[in-house]
Length: 138
Image 1 (tube, rainbow, N blue to C red):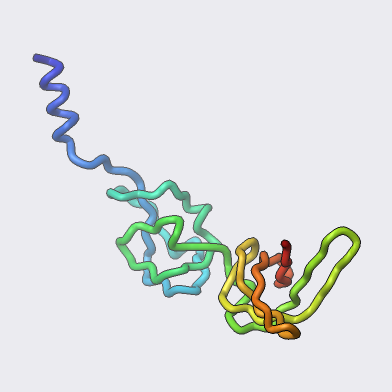
Image 2 (image 1 turned 90 degrees about the vertical axis):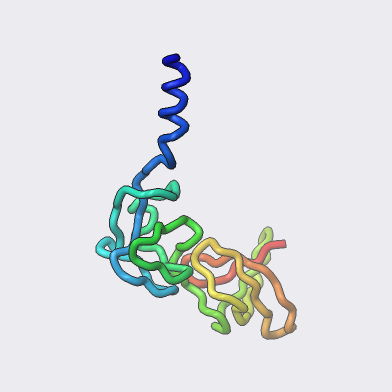
C-alpha cells in the first residue's frame, strides 16, 4: 500500500521545477548580453546553462522577458560581419598564403564561416581567429 501511495505521489507531482534564466528586458538579436539583462528564477523548461555562460555572449535571436534562455539562443560575439572583406589565411608546413576574401555570413571567434576568395571567386570554409582572420584548412 505504501509503495502504491508513494508511486502516486511521485507520478502525480507534475513537472519538476528548476531554476531558469530569463531576460529582464527584450534583448534584440546581435546584442551583447550584460549582467543586468538576466535573472535567475524558478520555473519549468530550464536549460543546462549558467549566468556566467551567458554574460558577454551575443543573442542570436530576440530574447523576451519571462521566456527561458537556451544555449542555442546565444553565441560568441561577432568578429566578422556578412560581406566584410577579411584576410584569408592558408598555412601548411612552411607555406603561408594570405589573400582577401568576403565573408558570406556573420561569425564569432572559433566559428566556421564560408568565405569567397576575391582573387579566384572560389568559396572556401574557414575558422574565425580572434584577430578577425579566416584560417582556411584543407
